[in-house]
Length: 200
Image 1 (cartoon, rainbow, N blue to C red):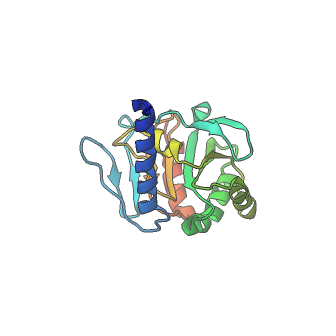
Image 2: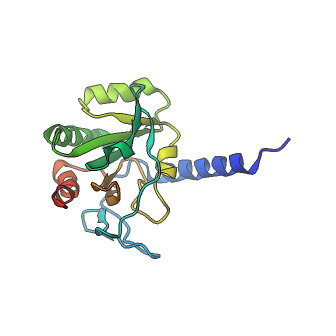
């Protein structure tokens, strides 16, 4: 008995994601790609891409169980700026950026910004929980060991999460406004958030 087409497509997509993550995992370079093929985003020299208001895409469903076992749906944060950070406990650049994310998240608590981690490729949940404890991460992370949220949560041709680490920031309308495909320090992270907080 052969597999149906739908599972085959899913297996193929997960295989493609695994290959893509293997190629792009733990990148700390300054690169990025300018929009092309009908996209309207621009990458600056710091490796941060942005999309102008009115030309931003809506992500797919980004929801599931957190590392702590609680249900979380990013759509519930509409009306706030949302920072989505893809990370793994095994990733050196993720460890380098973690203190910056923890500091900015603590500084902006209650100021209209929500942080959500997307923990991926950590087969052992305990290692991810230890990472959060070690770096005093004050926000939840969705547990996504197979990378399905990264693969299916962003429409093709948009500012999507494409490596580990990478970061996407959603505007107050829940649309994809900025992306970085590199480890971020506090200054670069704030440069993605602050303009969106000022938008009406």
